[in-house]
Image: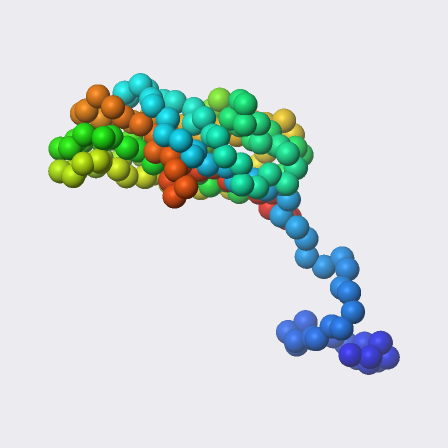
Length: 175
């Protein structure tokens, strides 16, 4: 579209435009963003809320996820989207597993999934709990993921592995 056409007519934003140059100042980038997961299974105490000990970082654009302390440090004030999932696993057969997960901000629950009950005749028993939330955050808030597993067997674990059943991710929403 020629510049003289733009100046002589109003632009209908419902029209489609094919640009051949570089467009600047439009849109934005949802950064920072991060995604971590648990690659190795984490043994947990039965019926105890446990912070997930992530060991694999896939994305971390601002280097804001602390793998040593297992939390995301919010780098700047804003609105953020977080998603997390916890895979619950028990190696025995004929087990009942109750589990729930929660995303925490500075030690307080932001969102928690209600407890799920799962019973399996198979060996092993496995199910996952996933949740997501949009939340206002301040710089230096710490975001963590917790899981609690209550099993009728003696070997409850938080599942890990390349299938990424236990994960935490998030990004800043452009506002």
